[in-house]
Length: 71
Image 1 (cartoon, helix red, strand yellow):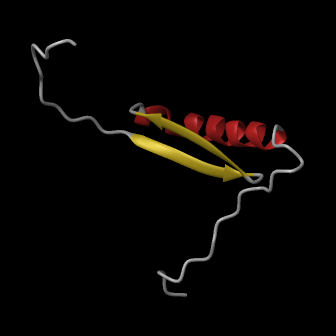
Image 2 (cartoon, rainbow, N blue to C red):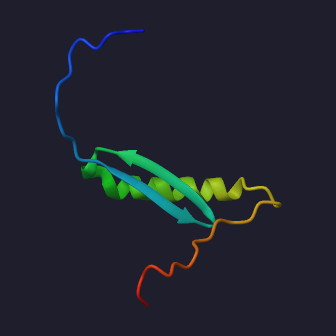
Image 3 (cartoon, rainbow, N blue to C red):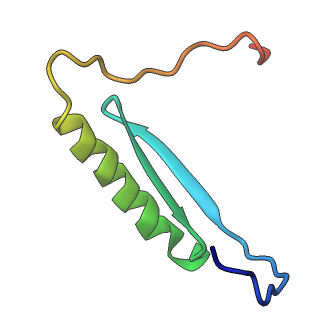
């Protein structure tokens, strides 16, 4: 097992995208905030590609109603 020799404290801004499209999830994490619009588009494409590969016996993902939020 290795030994930690040096640690540099730091902070970085990032985002995790979770996109539900056509009943499947696309997930992507990044620290490249400047390219966020393109990454959103590619994550939507990913979710749609996952949906196309879904078995006919698998149900599409759906979001459940939540009683925690006022209507």
